Image (cartoon, rainbow, N blue to C red; front, side, top):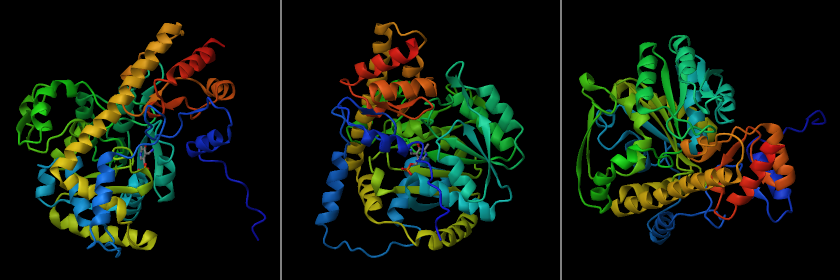
Length: 446
Ligand code: PMP
């Protein structure tokens, strides 16, 4: 009865790894999937994660009972705090409901299912381009997927005018998917000023923001440099009060936007959450899907969270009751192990500190790979402006190489990447940069 079933194509991203695994070449290089590798090209389990796992194993009071439908309570609370900030009024006013889900993908999917059932608008606008799984996640949940202009191939930067036009003409109330930082695949993020304009536009047209936060802590802009003095005081584990103002740096003089952080203020985790916090600060609704795959290296543990920020505690409460009805027939309740690791780390000051240091080391290694690749191309005299390699943010570089050039690099140099020319900088090492630069040079010179 299944004779009619045709072979489905490989997933465009995970299929790259399938092809890579089949290649016997000793110089082969997998720059397809977005997973962190060490300088030795090995997957990394963070020390702080190992430590948390050891603590969990040694705790004989721990059992393997089912979690509630919404997951581990501590994990949910701490995840909301991590993305929204410890001092978030939305959290204090109990307007946030958070559900532990199966990593980022599961969080997006549960959010999408909820919206398909309970939201008056069925259209979601996603950036062009975006992570390849987004259109499928949302359309299979019953939403109608449209795109808004995001990337400008000519500048290899943001098409901000196009974005404003497209979202400005989106039907009132439409859902808008936003990458909270380190946009995948382009590595191009709006500036804080542009974020503020996007926020005003969305709010003025009652567009519903749905943030995808898959890289919190992985990106890092120059805002970091300016925060060094504060962080020095925070890194030593002692208390620290920080009063932040957005008057000057965002030109929000009369808006009176500021924040007070005490103690836990951390490095780039906070910077990477600014876009989300800007939307929550204005009191409006907001969806956030969080993943711990990249920033804690918990890829296969499938640990993430969906938070829905509502206008009142009462609404948040009713929304949560409906989220349970979404989750129960889908997978009943989420797995316990990964969420316990995250909760163990987030709730302990010293372990949290250790995490931010390891996270920063990962982010810094990626940034140094950007610099090395840029310099390697410059020293080869490869035609073109490659400065986007150092300007783009996060795990990926959107090289601008076309599908033919990518196919050439795979065939002749055994370098595997998605056909849109995206390379995972986290898969590179000092040893493999020259090989990649040779391949790009040859591809461009053909
Ligand atoms: N969103 C984006 C933009 C991503 O890049 C990813 C991972 N590649 C995800 C969501 C979800 O990943 P996961 O389900 O592994 O957390």
